[in-house]
Image 1 (cartoon, rainbow, N blue to C red):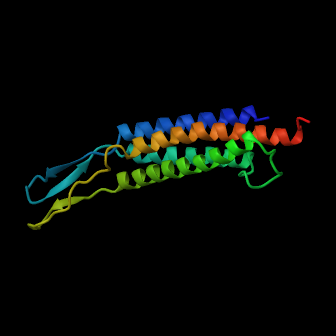
Image 2: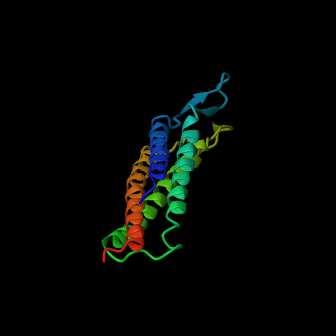
Image 3: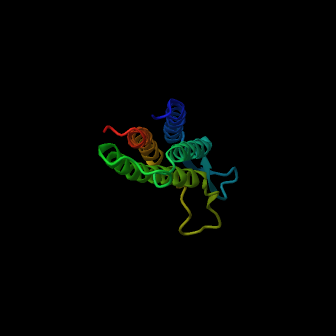
Length: 175
């Protein structure tokens, strides 16, 4: 039987991770060009950098919940054999889908956090022809991370329950 404690802890961690990723999308850095007082050069001024912390927090929480699910299920490949049948087939499919969604979510959150933290300081100095821009992270990177974190949360819960059913079926055969 699936441990209710594992399900609750993983659900809470995933829910907080999704919330942090959504907050990171809402608070991502915005850059604007500002001239200095003497009008000699222009520089980029950025807003709050809290989105980097939110994205990193979502990354860590999602990673932690994935580790808990994989330890609780022995990463599907370690431990005793599972009962052949629908639950095992479903657990195999959900295991693969869970890892794909997890990797996509982690890549989006990590890339968004790193890109959001990168800031260009000076834009135009000494009459440079092609000054660097005040680039910021594209809209939707953290949102994609949040959506895939939500998909990971849902699929990992179903995976754990299916794995537990297949494991219990092996211990208590129906014949």
